[in-house]
Image (tube, rainbow, N blue to C red; front, side):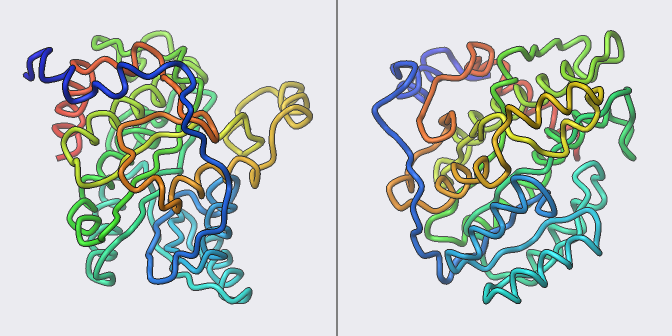
Length: 301
């Protein structure tokens, strides 16, 4: 376990950050010719719009999709509009699927410049993944953790490797309960979602410490109308459609973090759309971040 002094030194820049820093991240169209980007959950919502936008910046986009038919449709669309894309079939809820996809990608690409961990889920009733984990926890956290860990060697072959983890302001209501991490007791859809997003923020923090050569950030893209809200009751869904942002609007800060030259060395930080912000105190707990990493490593080995 690291000392508190070491923790303070590792994250001194974060600790001194005011709630909203001067650093602002605005949309732009920096070309990404020669760069390869993997976007998970790229068949709908933020993932789809991010894949389209990154292809429009001349990046070679790897479309990460659980459904082969829907994923190929996105690839075909990008190619038809003059972009470069290929399909990677991957189910973030299945460790076997993740390992196969990572192996396939490592064999087909000489480097990976950007990994966008976007795939996520929320389910009304507690379900288990193929590996026996609560489905939201498995998809939103453990799956992204395993994929990232397996792709670190490929990312290190890039001169400017980046990881963008798509999280949520919902992480502020999350709680790391070491005796009930996967909500065997007291399951709730949004409780499970918030906990997984808190875990993702902690993962990003620890990843930045362990892999200083890779710029790793976490972003809240805004409250966006995507399929992830489908477990909500129908009246709530109707209301959400009226007040939430479009998926294209939500993808804009993700694309910016993946492409902006001025963010090459920014790591371990949390962004609320286009500006850097301070995440919840729970998301800045270094001891929890290290412990969660070790637990995830054990669970996915």
